[in-house]
Image (cartoon, rainbow, N blue to C red; front, top):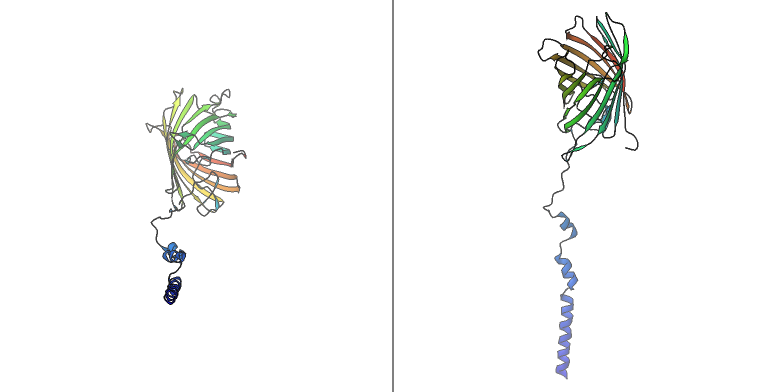
Length: 321
């Protein structure tokens, strides 16, 4: 009995020792896991996606746009109107751009007036070979008047023009853009524009290339094109070249200038070189006033030409767009 009692006493002591010395299983498991903070501090192979920097030259919205700082400023890109040189930019999809211009051309032998020149443009976004192609649909016509020294003053509708501007390349990081702008010019049906001296006979196919490059302090635009008369044997194929520069003076005022050349390909007739200067002033969120003053520095005419013009640019997108 005494031996049995001693055995039980030793067994009880062994159980107590095991309970005290051996930690519970869940405690051992917790000790084996690294602390939560340590896990979060351990380096991982996964790298966060690198966000690209904002573009150096944000896309210039027609009339007004937001610059890299998010501030709304006037578009100082050389453009038509007020210049003859045009830019590669097109209205956004579903956006309208309407230019209403009054223009005069004075020389010793000729007086020409566009009492109201209507230039209507609309932005579309067709897909070509799986890519979006920003496009501008354009239609324009003037209510015009003209008087030569030996002819009476005539008034009517001048030459109308229809065209499509295709923005083939646009890079906001390089500030570069390229467009082609095929157009057809024609006398307004039933208006007898050619007989009144307000338009050329027949039609004219116009094929220009428009290039734009933005720099830190100004925007440069170059145009090079060819004008092909159709059903008009009195006129030859003509080449054109325009170089324009523009710069914002304030957030609301932009200044621009150009030199524009045109000549028949034999360089013997239909020659003209013109210098034009333009100003644009913001009047509202969708309204810009512009004006132009220019003079010919070379012309086949005996006397030089002076050009004066002013007008309004409206841009708007219908609410359902």
